[in-house]
Image (cartoon, rainbow over all chains, first blue to last red; front, side):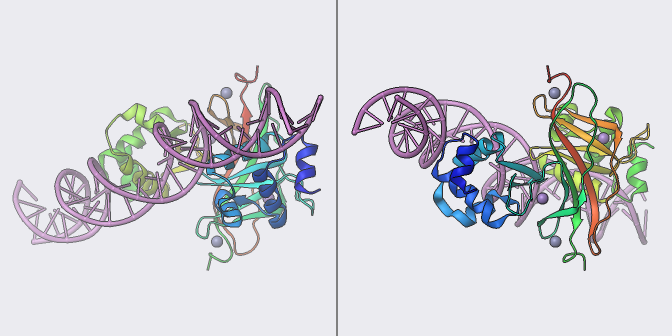
Length: 136
Length: 136
DNA sequence: CATACATTTGCAACAATGTATCAGTTGAGC
DNA sequence: GCTCAACTGATACATTGTTGCAAATGTATG
Ligand SMILES: [Mn+2]
Ligand SMILES: [Mn+2]
Ligand SMILES: [Zn+2]
Ligand SMILES: [Zn+2]
């Protein structure tokens, strides 16, 4: 599906920033931060618009957020081409040195049974440390 | 162990802010944020000093950080009285509405086997959603 | 106990991230 | 093409965290 179709399918208005953001996420197919997207798209939209767009797209179930660290949030499509859905799916590794976020597809996250009354919305499993490049 | 002993044992200089912070963490025995500690300790130290102290105490292995969310970091003693050690130990639940962080002691975190070369330093399992109070 | 030196602190300035308000623009449906 | 709700950009603000440097403090030594 192209960005326009995705937006229509989720009943979200088609706007220039939203289309551009979805397109960029599709092309890279990896978690991207505000900075990453800014590098790709330049001054296509205001920072305020960015945050509002990400909120809208998250609420609509088109993307989801990964909190890699208190100072780094990344965003991914829920339905990427090569099946990179994921939500409480796999572990993410965050390298404290090179600041890279790596999807550990092979490390699946177990389902946790919350006590009665609690409602789960998202689940992040973040392992922080040094990646194989930086650990030398 | 009292704060002074802990600091001495880890070969960290004994200073007023560090002692006060450890003391507060011991008394509450629950994860506290910068704001929580500020409420307890007032203007005992500057904000800059706080961040530097937490870095030092973390490096020394006296406390550890829990990243509840990109805008909320909490700190806990590694060696609390009633055995609340925890590191890759149990799941933390973060209520997106009342902003409470709850230790799910009964939900243990599995050990993940990282690929060769990767070095784990910390592991957070954060489930976000609504707590039983807010989910009504 | 006094001194000396390294460590730590407070202050000021800055950077990054995120939110609120509001006037002006845009887009989907008719 | 109109219309009106939805969205955007600009500005201003809040919070969290960092950096540089002079002044204060803590520990080790004599
Ligand atoms: Mn992933
Ligand atoms: Mn806990
Ligand atoms: Zn790395
Ligand atoms: Zn709650």
